Image (cartoon, rainbow, N blue to C red):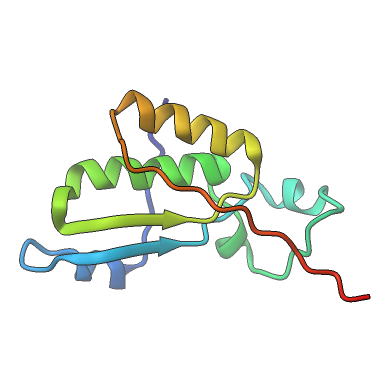
Length: 116
């Protein structure tokens, strides 16, 4: 898959130096590849800015950047965690991680609770 340049906040880039090791990197990625995609989904409550909700290639491209960063950063980050909004993205990510021989993959399903 094609790698899209990652635009992580400067504070994150400053944290990841050779002298620092993090236990966890948790992410709620931009889920959409464009604002029109975000606006066209009636099942989402879009309450963020374009910077928060949109990334070229959507959530799959953003998380694949995290995968590439994990290869580059090696053991300096121990565990990566990300929300995924689409089952198709999760399927593609699992396939990519398996192709890279990643053995520790965990998923949890979140669901909205509707109060009666």
